[in-house]
Each structure stands twice: as structure tokens, then as C-alpha cells.
Length: 171
Image 1 (cartoon, helix red, strand yellow):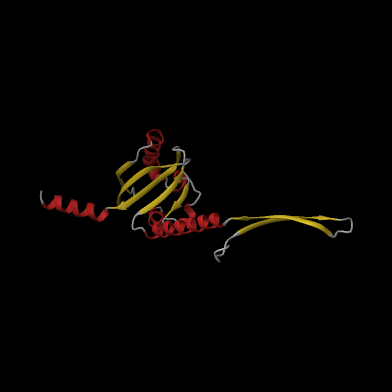
Image 2 (cartoon, helix red, strand yellow):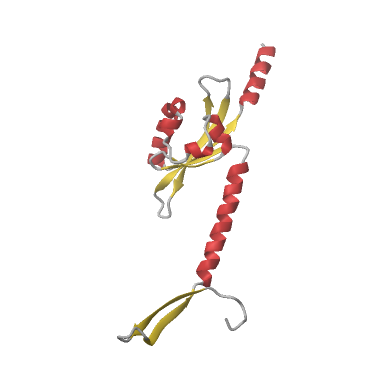
């Protein structure tokens, strides 16, 4: 541009040819798409930050579609279900976590109606001595409708065991 900065251009053109296939004239346009490219870069940076946060979060985290398919999940929550992150993506909660679906489904149905989060639900694993504190929340779309659901899970097994030990010693 006139300031010496690089800009992104989108060029289109066409040629009018004679019967021999030689160009008689060229007609074209150039559009400055620098602002769009900057926004794309900013979006990619934001996505990278979000991906890193999700990946290294010391909590279980997932995003579900409005029809209960895993869109995003971190390793902490995937490990809870005994599957990899990749094995979750696109899968339905009822298929991947059947032991928890009976408890999760009414919560998600409630969120669909109220668009309010359900916080700090204590969840015990059916076959292991493990406990989590789980919160579920609506993920709105740009128009305020329901795009899907989010969930975070904090394992509180050690805290629960310590409380139980404390209760037993105070009895």
C-alpha cells in the first residue's frame, strides 16, 4: 500500500479472446482483503489459546452438540470414560458413557428448557471408588438459542475419602 505495508489482495480477471485464441483485452479487479486476513489470524490465535487451555486444564472438560454428541473433550475427561479424545469426538454421550447417561440426560433436558446451568452435581463412578463434582451449562448461539452444552468435572475422590475418615474418627 502507499505506506509501504504489505497487504493481501484477492484478484479476479478474465480475458476476451479472438478466434485465434489471442487475448484482445483483459478485465480484472483487485480487492483488499487485509482486514479479513487479520481477523482470520486473530481467530486462529484465539482457537490455539482455547485448545491449549482445554488440553492442559486440570479439570475434565467437554462441549456437546445440541443432540448430545461430543464436539470437544480434553484428556482428563476422556480418561474418565476409558477412551481417547479421538474416540469421543462425534460420539453420542449415551453410547460412550452409558453408566452416566441416565443421570446426565435429565440435566441436559432441564438446561434445554431453562437455559440455566446446573452446578456442582456430585457423581460417583458405579464400579470404582471415584467421585466428581460436575457442572453443566448451556452454550448459546449468536442469536441466543442453544448451540449445545458444556461440562466441567473436578475429581473430589481424595477430598471425599478424607471427609469420610474425619467423620469416622469423630464418631
